[in-house]
Image (tube, rainbow over all chains, first blue to last red; front, top):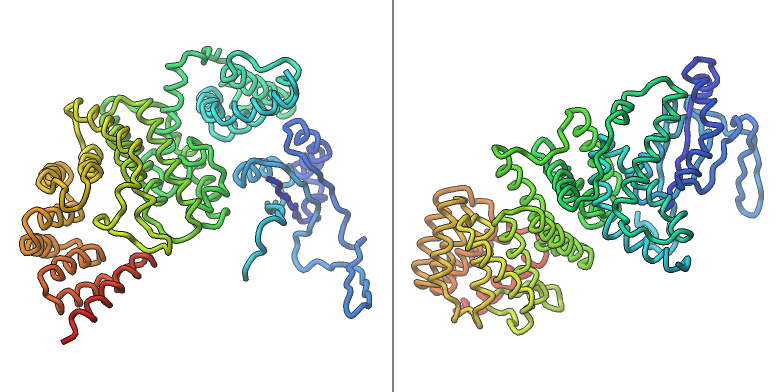
Length: 121
Length: 415
């Protein structure tokens, strides 16, 4: 199964210059290679700061595009890694090895299988 | 070997060997997480090398050695980066060759006993056993237990943390602890079976898979342990399985033992179970599972309820009640007595068991009393008992059955 590991962190901590944070930054550059070697890696990208982003909506055929999002919490969406894992527990274990897990938070979400019924709310 | 051939055999090897390889890697690497990573890497290495080099003659030994080598290699690299790691102590000890069949069996037993360790909560034992010993995925376990996958995942994460933090040893228990630990392992397997067997909610296929998995685990315990109760448990599960298809009709309604189509019972499973019971009886150390299996076997042999040897069943319940006293066993014995000596004797026995306490909230106790009252023509008393049972019953099929009995009595009982 495929899972998205969605990475959140507080930029003031990650880029704050502590030895711990610098260690994380040094490791995340090469972590894709670690995941490729273990066969878990499918895709992954780091994202720039939200102040470089635009937010787009289509309503009634009209597009609105505004800058942002502006952060409401200290932790921001910082990147994602798509992995292949046997099950949720293996995915959680792989996510625990992502360097940013030591400073931020990783949300592990199964990727939707469209052959399955839609969720009932 | 062709690529497709290697892929097919890799999948076959995964099914037959992965759990054994994991069991050995946990011992060699000193923990579940490291071993699971090593197992993954070993199969990744196999996927790369086997199509080129062919499948090794001993895939188990190859995978253990590949997993161990790759983990040690990774730890060495990490150690160079981060200074020495505590795990490196493990690397200093030369690992014995794990290829001897007895050693493999010992590792499988270590894994079962660790997953069924009494320090873990019962829920955690079940989830861990299904995933680590049974090889089910977290999502499969969640579907079978109608729980969200994150709930099961967290249960497994916490159980592993507990094993690590409390340093629960990865070992086969010593002689003094062994009987209790075997009990715990057998109970985990039986709980898995019951979950699949008793529940009538949810997608029925998945529940049946749970029974099949419990039977598979039961066979593993029979292979690994010289234990009559393991034989008894496997026999008991096979006998339940043999008549599973006849327990519920096409509409999903409950069919009582007396109305089941006995021609549809699975004779091969019954024969296998009877052979296991014979073996278990021969050991002269028969226990509660063996006795329950023997009772189920008497039912399985009988052509009808009337032709059932109720005297033998009552006698077996007497023995069972002596070695494993419980109100539910007492109730079952009282019902058997009613079948042997008639509904009046049954009613007296059932009321005595209910009077002793412990069954007030058990819907089947009230249903059993109602049945005897119905047979005696005590319509009003039977109605009251069925109503009490209906108040307590939760499963839809059981509720429909009890309501049906009440409806019948209302029609028949009308002046």
